[in-house]
Length: 438
Image: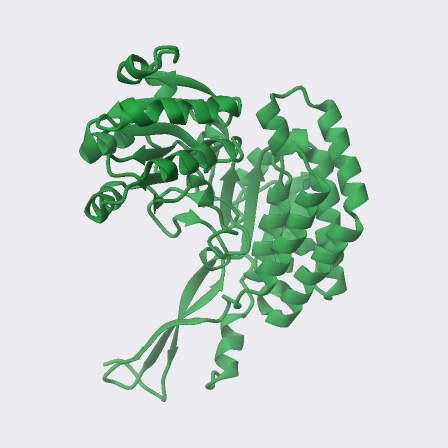
C-alpha cells in the first residue's frame, strides 16, 4: 500500500527487478560479475542516502590511507608504458591527484540525493494523483582507457545515485585501477553495503568488453570513456543502451570585440593547462580584423609553453613560420600540445567551421559584444558552450557535480558532464482512492 510522505520516497528507492539476459553465457568472468552486480543493485537501490554517503566518505578515507599502494601500482603501470608524454600524463597519479580523487568522492557525498526526488506531480480531474519520481538506472557498465581516476569518479557517482557499476579500464592502467577499486570496496564494506555494487574486470582480456556489450538484461547502460575507436566500437556492437562520450574537438573563437589580454589568457589555458583532456581546445578561430595584431602574441604565448601548430593559409600569411594545416588536421583531436589555427570572417564563418569539423563537445567565444556571444551560443549544437571562459571548465567537478562519468555529446537523456542526476531515470507513480476506468 502506498501512503503519503516518506513511504512514497521508499517506493522510489524500491528494488530494481532482475531480468535474465536471453542467450547470455553461463560462464565467463564478466557475465558472472554482472550477475553479482545486478543482485547488488537491488540492495543499493533500497539503501538509505545516509548509508550511500557513508560509503563515499569511507572510500575517500581509504584512498588516502591506501595512497602509497595506489602510487606504487601506478608506478608499475608507468614502467610498462611506452606511450607519448601526453598519454603518460593522463595515466600518471601523484599524491595530489589521489587527494583530488578523495575530495571528489566527498564532494559527491555532499550533493543532494537524486534518488526519490519528485520531478513533477499533478492531479487529474478524476482524482488520480500522478508523480514522476527519480529512480536508479540499475547496473551501469563503464569502459574507459588510460585515466585511472575515472574508476573512482564513476564508482562514486554510481553509488550516490543508487546504481551498481561494472568497470573495465584500459590494460595500460590495470594495476592503478585495481588499487583504486580496493579502496572503493573498503568504503562499501564500512557502510554495510554490498561490495559487489562496484565490480572491476579481473584482467586486461579484450573479451571482457564484448561480454559487457552483449549483456542485455544484466547491464542497463554502457558508458564508453575514451577515444574515437572505443566509442565507435561500443556504438556498433552494443546490445545495451549507450551514453556516448565523443571526441573533444573543442574550438575557441576569438571575436573582433575580444579583450586582447583576456583572449591571450583564455587561449593559453584552454590549450595548455592539461593538453590530454577532452575539454582542451584543439582549434583556435580568430577574426581577420584582429588577427594581424593578436595572433602573433597568442602564438608566442603558446610556443613558449611548448605548443606546436597547424595553420591555414590566412594564419600563415600573418605568422609565416607556422606549419600548414590540412583538413585532416582540423578534424583531429590531438590530446597533445598541438593547436590548429584558422582565420575567419566573423561569427557566421566561425560557426560554419565548427559545423564542418566539430564533435558537439565544447565551444567557446571570447568577446565583449553580448549580441555576438548570444548569436554564437545559439548557433552551435554542442553539449557545452562558453562565453569568455576556458573550454577546460567543461568538467563535472567545475560544474558542481562533484565529478563526472563522462561528457555526453548525444541529443537524448543527458548532455555535457554526466553527474548523479544524469545517472537516474524515472517512473510514474499513480495514487488513487478506488478509481476504475470506464
